[in-house]
Amino acid sequence: MRRVPPPPSLAARALDLASLQLADSSFTLCSGKELRFVFVVSPGPYARRYRCLLRLKAGRKVPDLLVLEPDLSALANGKRLPHTYSHDGRGTKLCLWWPKAQEWSTGMKLSETYIPWAVEWLGYFEEWLATGKWTGGGEHPPSAARRRYGVGREAA
Image 1 (cartoon, rainbow, N blue to C red):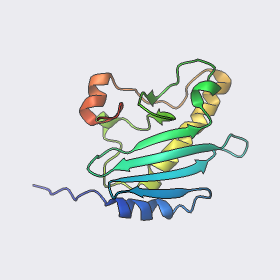
Image 2: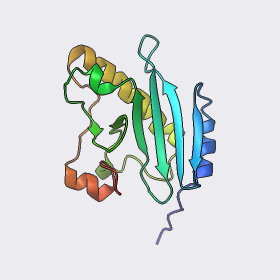
Image 3: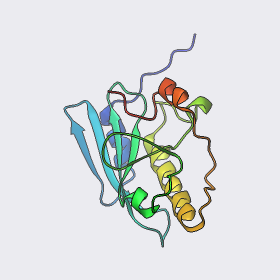
Image 4: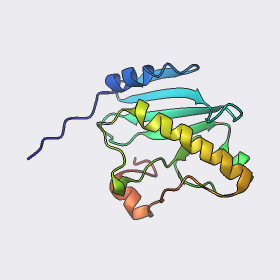
């Protein structure tokens, strides 16, 4: 039987994210139980700048990636945002990968997955705003599957 290594600690995750050396980024470690990484990215040289929050709680396998600014719903002028999850709180929670396909696991580096995936998602979002067509692909799982894999609405 193959033993699965434990997920990296929050401190190891912070070191990984720091290696990106993103300008306008900051870390907060909340009582040793939650890592918050706030950063600003742009999907292209002529695209908007987006202020994002990557949040990872100790003991929870799946991080949250939220776009805090600008308000994506306001940019969409009332259209339903593609590939997002509902959640309680500020910002828009992005759907970056499909759990059933096991596209992400806890052993993967956030600097090589969540951050570039968010930038890519934002590029597709900008295109969607201009054309009305989502070209980012993907499949948004039904609610039962999101609950089973621990993604979507934040568990209390």
